[in-house]
Length: 273
Figure (cartoon, rainbow, N blue to C red):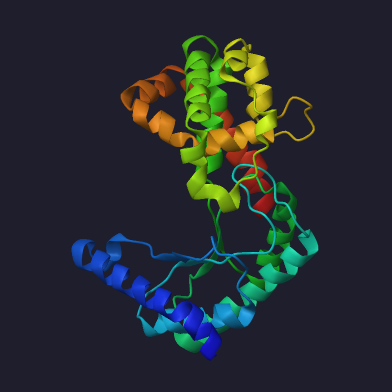
């Protein structure tokens, strides 16, 4: 207990300060508190998670979701890399810990496990679905990244100015690869030797760009490094501001179709149906 407290207690106390600061400014009914610890060097064990939840309860944080680190690699925008059976055991263990903490420490009954960088982790969705059904538990799956990537797929698929903007985003991400990747070093694995240069991509057809980016491991043209780079390259599009948003509107048909199909068919159905 001393070892676990020494490792996590100060961080939980800081989370309490942040929570109270936000509540003072916005009101408790205006936020959904989550605490994440997924970007750590090693996974939290069940006793560690239990201690963390006890400390959170002591801080009076009505936590709704908690994101631990699991065994294996949760790289941005690509499938899980690791022992699926071990992940399933850990996920079930963590659900048991949460259920116990809710009853023992008075945490909200709606408390859920949160899987960060959870999008596109197709190989673990069946184990997650089995565990949720077994324990009657809920889930928060962080999917912002896959939606952003499907927006770019939609732009590229539209051709014309949409494809041109997608190519511009890639060129910008490639030019700033070091600064874009640095904050995400623990959750990306990019083989830079397999990244095409901007000039090559500029000559691609719509189909070539889509096949390189769309997450289809069975497609020989799929490039996981390119997909991960574009995942962390969202800042390039953000700096475009209205120009990017206007292009999304112009390509609404292809963007909407790709985003909807990806979330519904590749995420929600495997997880819950």
